[in-house]
Image (cartoon, rainbow, N blue to C red; front, side, top):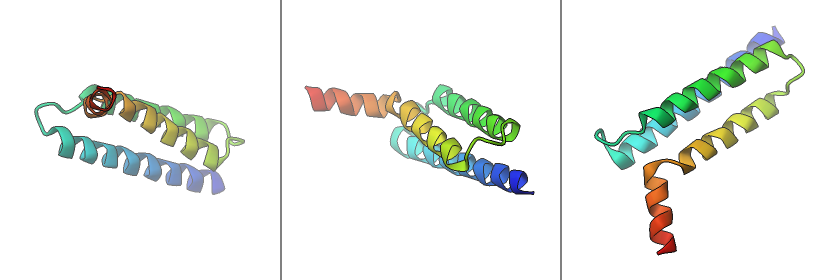
Length: 91
């Protein structure tokens, strides 16, 4: 029962973070420049982390959530609005 609860909580976290990423990108870029590739990478990464948590019971919940949060930050760094902001900051 504990394994199912942890998997469900992790899945809810992945869905909420992915939805917030999608909303933030849509509000910044609009419909014409939405980063579908980054969203796909985020979904696939979330599926991989959830499947690893389901397969390996010794993987802590905090490790899975932390790794997905860091992965989300890494994916969001390489989107167009962040790259443009870094270019403006450097110039």
